Image 1: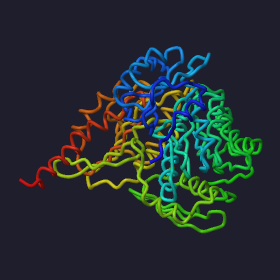
Image 2: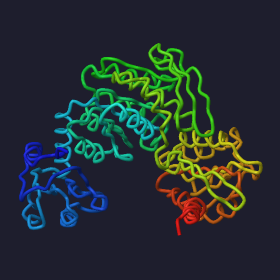
Image 3: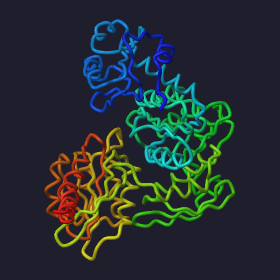
Image 4: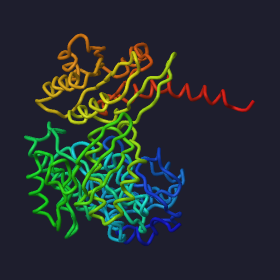
Length: 485
């Protein structure tokens, strides 16, 4: 396979100078813990540590070369090949990574998609990666690499022969998307939805819509803007699209004027079936993931497929094979004495909209004869002055969806616990770890348990603990029974 980068290309992109002989470069990394042999290591400055502290370790692990500040290149030259990059900014190595990202974008003929939104951007990005990979070489953001270093790193990793590129772009504040979409220069840009997420940093929901609308500014001339027609902020997003280089706008949703419109959504415990019309063409497809919110975002996926001129029928078929990303709805059978319970892992982050969607999905899961629907919810952050009301307000969704028991972690989610009737209260704890043992003792066959909360609440620890006790252990027992003596 062709090297991802040659020394000459790196020097041309950054204005730097390579000291030593670079090994074949097949990837890029900013973290020595996940670095693979042949990766180009960028010694960027993190919030707590300077990447230059890890250069020797990166080269010892087999990095193809290390990108360092020019003033420190000689310091590391005995450890292996280093690319010293000039710069007077705060972090010349981050500037160099951006420059290499721009060079990667310039050298490829790939059709590039950028995705943002208050809710569902990672799942939508993964769905696009999944359906496009069946149609050609596809490169996409890893996990949620959507910020000021994640986007240029993803660009720097993009092979020249890529046919489709899918980039997730996130933000916490206004004007953070502007430089990122300018780097990506998408052919198609999609906004999943606008909700009161990160509202602590914004004066209003309209301001969040304006921040999301920044993604259209980076569109290549004549590109396509894809917008959720059902969202109340649609007119504001449309205005941003019309003021951008976009040559066309495609809408999706259930609204009667949506270009990609859902006529019927059938929700089942483990999948969804959607009857839709895509630019006037009837399409019926199955989704390999559950939940109304994922069904709605799948309409956006098909809108992007149409905008790219990719094969719509093949994409619709591929959606049936889609599985949820880690922490975003994956289901695991827990093998309890006497039968099974279901664990729904929604532990990757939370906001009011995604929490309601997760509760709705939990309501659709079939339980056993004595089974209960149990929600385990951790604090939702960055909600500003509305935080208490937003947490209390989830009680309406709990009641509407018939959730039997609610366990909470954190002081903010304690407001929800107080708002619930006593019959629906499980335990209110200060931290996620405090809920593991009570839940383990409470679970019984037929139960369905869903875990969700903001990342800082570490709700994933509950998921991993229950899986280790009731899922992984069962798998090990099964393997031992079938092993050949």
